[in-house]
Image (cartoon, rainbow over all chains, first blue to last red; front, top):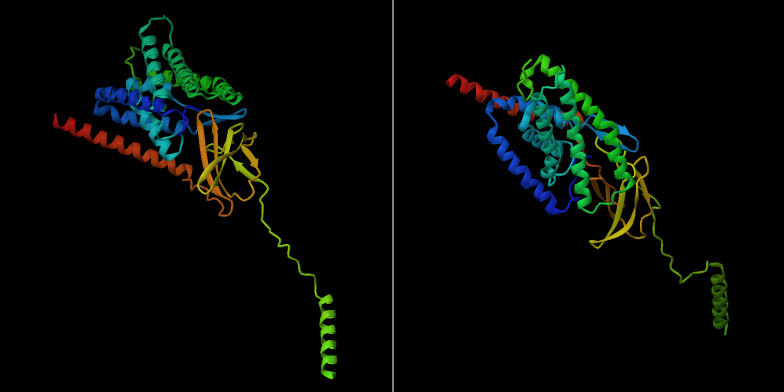
Length: 207
Length: 148
């Protein structure tokens, strides 16, 4: 659902999507070191195939996004990761449109950045409980999807799409399936990486 | 006199013969074939049907496009419509919350399904790109480390 196809949005909307994406890409790529690229490639591979993991939820079909996962592992570099993954999905799976790669990257990438900020803030916060990585990883993963769905709905409404029963069903399917699955998945992965391979996470955690 | 007699006999026979041939008619009959039902199937990559999606059928005649029908797919992603008499070209747009697909076809020519690269190949191609990018970066960073 979070991949908008060609010819649905108004040109000004997908146009501004490209502008925002270009700006964030320029900033994040400037921050990127060449040593980060192999790690980004690995996470991008996961995000790229995530859309293939789909559930038949009532009348609609939904799939994983893994944007929260990209956020907690790559930090701000999640943005180029998602951009590359979307480009490949558009051309290899015909998943989403080509003109809409910009706006789709905004829809998925900006929530990924926010999920990173949540994760980072949560790690700094001393809540006095163990397993903070799992809890904040889970929150980050869930938030990323919620925000992505929200952005998408706002854009569709801005285009004048009727909020039909079908749309409601798709949003519901995300609430029932994708959000819980990603919440649990990102939480578990965050906890797992923190113990097994902490350098894979975007933040340096004192264990 | 004999000649006239035999001629009139011949004429009579010919007139009688016309009674035996089937009646010719000046009412020319026109026929046109009609396909009564065209079924459109819409599904997502991976095979899940696109249920309750909005369907728009445009008929194309002399390169002029005209909205012919609007409807919704059923729960199996199917939509049936009866084509307009005499129009064989159609463009069908199926759309649901940001997902959109288009199909242009001609009933007389039949439609060619888009050749879809098998999924595992698409995945391999994608992985190949990423391994390539990662590999180049690893090479560059290794060279940088060597230089230091």
